[in-house]
Length: 505
Image 1 (tube, rainbow, N blue to C red):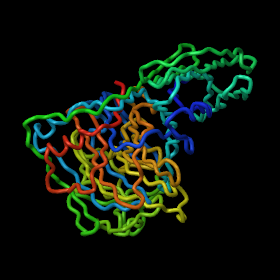
Image 2 (image 1 turned 60 degrees about the vertical axis):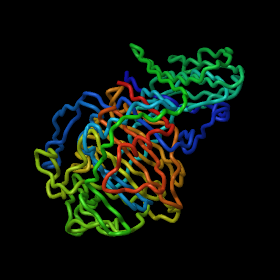
Image 3 (image 1 turned 120 degrees about the vertical axis):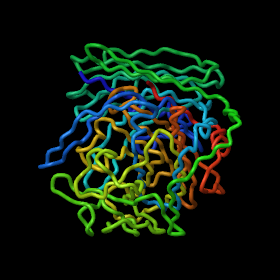
Image 4 (image 1 turned 180 degrees about the vertical axis):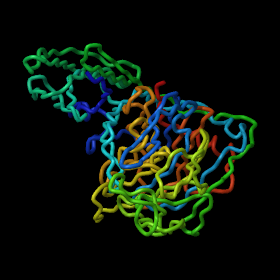
């Protein structure tokens, strides 16, 4: 029987939601507004299926191994923007020396140690440029009472969960019989250092033969003085499997001090207002139009050069104009270094193929806004902007389809993503197989950045191989994307309190 990780993808009931600082919107939990998120312990050793040929409508692959800090996100990666979006500035930096990263240390903060607490089953990518929306329920963070819930959840053959929310009293429990499903028991325990209180605990067990609940009992647990958060999940099978995670809240970290004065050097830059770009190539997924890229009935549209308007293809490289991308329009940024078979591996014939951003240590500074787009005529992702990174091998083969390494875990990092139309919350999730050796690996948080609808947001995305960490930081509006950034400046950015996500090994 399939063993899957599932945490908080079941409805936990109105009483739990009301008692917490989190809100459920369109199937996703949102807890605390933050300006910084840190992923720790990122990177593991594994393998994925790399595409080696797309001839005659046959997708051929071979196993490719990876390892090291941030792996597999230490391979070349591409940067993606989805509208509604105004991309104002993009700057990419490399560390000038080892001492330039000396001030990047492990941080204390609001910890979320995850064993893939999200049901991150990827929706099918579509040829018409739909960026799949992960309908993930994210871990509830802090509530004002201790509540322990035991519930039997069922997973359908298509991967969806079927469940009924637990009510405030056992007398009103409503059950629905599972059909062709697999039993999964999820346990949630939340403690906050509020005043002592107690609450009822419900447990239900399903009789697999009669399809009715076999027992229901109530117990009482009192609050503790320590703030903790525990989630564990067990799937019913011949041999049980359990996974757990915990979080705690601590004070912000003090800045780390060293004598280093080394800086990070900018090697690529774009400014929409000035019409300036160097070191970057703007692409989209409209191959087969305007003399750019290719299209086939097997694989659909390939990569293409992006026109200045951001919504059509061009026959050669263009600088993206100072434009507002509508809903679902996507712009992809690579370096301006053309691919070779040795630098990029296999890529689809007839496409503009460029190298992505390589190495385990790199810094991206972005300035963008995400205006509302309520009148969009897009078929998908209406008013759902996003900024994310992919392993460069994915768009160079088939970004929206099955002929890429995505399904075998070559890596995606969602930096700032809106998960439902019109939402003002920007979520972040790391999609790798780390911690589970399947598509439910990686991690994320229910804390969120605030969507910049009326003004621009300046943000830093730091991949740091030395500390095995990825940092997301909202920067002050006065931050300059200059030719270099001092190590002292980066250390100051990192000194703020943040949400820390520890990815399991």
